[in-house]
Length: 219
Image: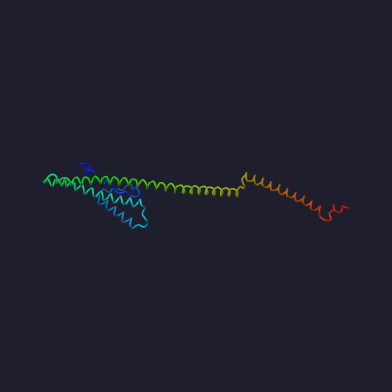
């Protein structure tokens, strides 16, 4: 028994767009093919364009189904050819050996193809995960920023409402009262200075009015 007799093509299954946990592996080729056909029909009936990465993922799933089926076919062919080697004439044995070699080469190529497909599917899965992480980081930053600013605004409104209610109930705080008193004193000083200036200006104007006493005393 060689490696191809022990090889199980069911190890290469379908790759979903996002990881799904808890579902059993699809091991039978018939069930796997039905699943792929269902996915394709659902995709064709869905609205909207499909991304190139998604198209490639589905194409690789189709190739996986086809390669698994072909591997099983060539393995049965080789088993029949090996049985023919045990009997028959030289021509039949020569033909059987050729069939065995052809089937073995085909199975070897199929295994390498399945491994390559699996490698591509893994890379596509990593790319999808990286793209999802980038989208989550970008959207998460803006969302967190907006949420943080909203929290600040809500907290400021709550504090303003609390201070307003305390002002109505207890009057202004000491530091506010002191500041208002200081501003009131400054306003009074400014008003007094303005009144004094107006008085001085009035005396000057009165001195130059016609008929003023100073004018009458002039020769």
